[in-house]
Length: 325
Ligand SMILES: Cc1ncc(C[n+]2csc(CCOP(=O)(O)OP(=O)(O)O)c2C)c(N)n1
Ligand SMILES: [Mg+2]
Image 1 (cartoon, rainbow, N blue to C red):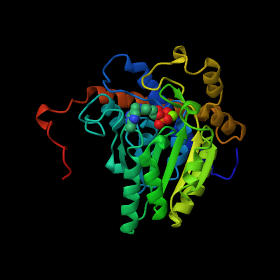
Image 2 (image 1 turned 135 degrees about the vertical axis):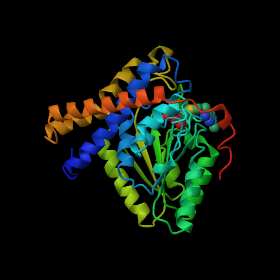
Image 3 (image 1 turned 30 degrees about the horizontal axis):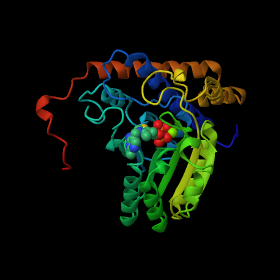
């Protein structure tokens, strides 16, 4: 691990990843109670991408996400209580209990939208970038999406337009090698995903998405260029989801990927790797990291209690929020 970043930055990265992991582990533990009634896509194993990208962002920056949104939302500074209450369908949820896991929205932190329509938020992120530029506003737009989103036509339209108009937008592709149960080689020719962005004359980067420092550093470079006005950037991060596509369970019995492959990627756990590096470099002691973990677990417990005791939306509010004010 490079020593070029302050200990505070390293601890922030660790905390961000750990919060996502502990929150999702709690969802795994509680999902079977059937009180969270929304489809839920967990990002356990992929936390470094959210943490490393979002620590480079400021409040004015707008984030867009997909169906696997928890990590992006929490790393952008979203409310843990608001997210869990949303999963429980409660009025105190960040989308007022109407969206569930796949439709997280929180304008207070400029987390503009997550929707499960594959590639659906990419053109919207470009639209926001267009508006930011037209209005001379600070801030950039960031779109998180999976490896299957690049197979959608709208992905190319959005990249073409953003490149032509040199828009302040960062495209973040989390390549976890699968779309549901279909592997990358079954869906795409043998070429790097980044080549698609290069074809649209967009600055393209590629990095290990399970190495939070690589994610943080690569994003820092890309964003420095975007902020200097050179136009969009695209980063492909290689990573891996540990659990089933949708839901809290393991899925090694489904047979679309081998147990060996899953175990190999679990060995590359971004949190474990980073923790070991921090201990070796004496960024923190084991005791300090343990304390931090306990604090995060307590925060998660409190958020669950808040979500469970929150009220459901009132029936009479059914027609609210259908149109923008
Ligand atoms: C336009 C569209 N087509 C199909 C689906 C069904 N679907 C939901 S998630 C998904 C795969 C997503 O894979 P990827 O983009 O790689 O993200 P990951 O789930 O791996 O994070 C598909 C095909 C959808 N939601 N939207
Ligand atoms: Mg994928």
